[in-house]
Image (cartoon, rainbow, N blue to C red):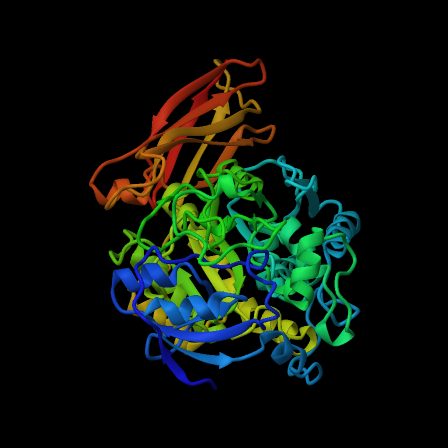
Length: 585
């Protein structure tokens, strides 16, 4: 443990994170430090450093210091303490044997983390092994380096486009967070391989459509996986990193956070500027995808950064990045009732909001489920802002824009990617019950839920928030008929166009605009009998509901002859709306 230091006073505009491609020529090691920040100016200073999501009991925040950052921290005026002088060496020395749980679904045969090709091969294999239950999906936006992003859709009779609720999981918004990608893939292995062994998994497989995107940031992930462990003595690896970075990073390349967007000096924005001259031939690299979503994008309070060298650089615009275009497009084209975005590190379970201390309108539901899930995985359950201010994040976007019951899971304690064999199987084992609880409670109607075999502690947390097991979304049902009252097959769409609110406090956001226009468009098909039961999110966004206003969906039901009928629906959480016979054609 290093000595506590206090630097000389510095203004909130005195420096930016000297990221891995800026200032890494000194031979400095990566370090972990705890920093005490009190008040908004100090938190804004802290935001320019690389946070790890670890918060100590006294409120000190852990940051990863890249070469050049220690000098900046010493000059910042912030009180700090270096806890780990060489993170690469510490992680290389962690035990690699000593598992504590039985074999888990979807474990790797190698006992090490997957690379991108493994994820793609595993998802293809599952789709081939279970052709009626698993389908490979290809997201529409190729990455900056030309890669395709894949996901997997899993449920019984997967090709039937019905109104079943959707549960979404993703991983690796941040390149270095390898365990985050293992969790969603292991979940679908479990769903597909174990329904006969666990009636709860069968209930989810039959009644919920699960969609996973294990690796969101595939370029960044591939970059971090191209660097072999430091103990191998090698530099570089399976891919061809940028030449400057190959020299600068060495074993530190495994700790890169952002995507691979190259940022020339002219593209660096107007935020905190570099604290020292950048190396010749090396520019800032990357946007933080988990600060690039539209909801509350562009803050000036430390929830993201306008500087391309900062690890929380939010990009030039909402959805400027392919990664966030892919995820937001998927979310807006499905009725995603519950979602988990998996991250490391910190052992935290987070819910809305990240930009304000005000309770979300559905805080009782979010907190009750969050605390109940935490009884299984042992994570600290809290609102995101209780960690620190965050804006433009995945889970706040999913809840704030779509109404999804969304969470961020921060796994893996104090390491971004600890040794696989002693970490990942145990991590999945303790999160399995949490995922089951969320998928069952947020996606299924009470009469559909399996016996979750809740522990007394989990039941107590649900009771504490007065959650009695009612419906946590809306269900729209009915039957499509022709003019003579005969049942006919039909297609249904729900659409809504609205303005997502950007950051508007203080000086506002860099774009100088209040909102970003978006459209939700989801669809389903009936069977030959024309009947439908569609599990959907509320039509009114939480922030609009908090203002005592409503928003509506436009429902269109189209018969086999292409003739349709439309009507507006205002739907609330817990509502069951039976439309009866809907005449089409």
